[in-house]
Length: 117
Length: 275
Image 1: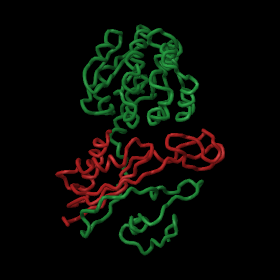
Image 2: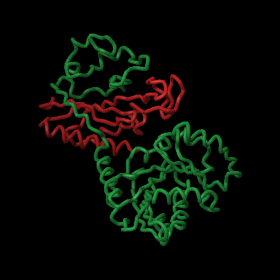
Image 3: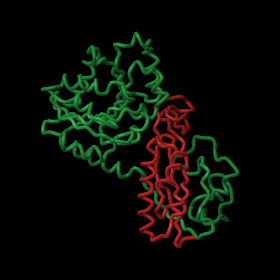
Image 4: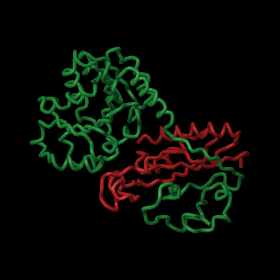
């Protein structure tokens, strides 16, 4: 349960961008959360408003976009979505796979307001 | 037209013009589609979690692309640690497990065996107390305790601060004993070279598949307390299968730090790494 510290890190980066953009407020923060990132999107959405209190991000919506675990098979070339944390090709069963998605933990974009609405 | 689903996003609102999809447009259908598909296929459309109501609804907003790694600060500290260690010829191990798996006990036995032969250093993390630093002291290796107070894991910034206190000119191996926790430490790069997951036989064979985050990132898995295997009715084959399910190719050691069984292989591995 480290989502509060992750939320604080998201907030810091969002506030920095908002300041650079001379925005009055942050309306929405959009993040991509991989299924293997070790971060629970719901816990993050719970923690973010607590972290954002008293800042220009207060009241901002945190939108967490889940990114499923996806692997590319070195044997048969298929891309597939196995069960999270079980790195095996869904097409041929080989464990010789490379992770292509699911570990991300990224801020995608911010929606900024130039005057308080 | 949207290249993913065929919807007519050309007539969309500000969100679409900014390169994204508006939630209302796509909320009506599921985006799952058959795989495989070619590399470069975007994944941002998958599984949107319903967003909270927009408090600024009605106000003019503009979208700014950020595209930043949320853990960038930790990652940067980890990269700097790895550079420092490389310059000094030090290999670092990040030991992770649930509390009570025997991380400290394994380190005690390891330091005793390597004493006078391979220069070692230890950074150990717990929520509170310096009990582990006391246990590991006096075995020929500098030890630094980190008390995280509330945090459930160590971070690279904490390691960077502790590093100057433990590294000596002859240090070859650095052991970082993470906070006992089978979930959170997996997310944080500490600048180590090898992540080591420990699992004691009394915890059960299926821990790797029940707590996969930790084991999936571990290049080395150490099965500990094997002197208790009989009492715990430990199914060794099932445990090895569970490890290989979530971490194919993991190197596995089976040890008892108490009796010394299996320790030769573990120590031999560390000596080869130390060069």
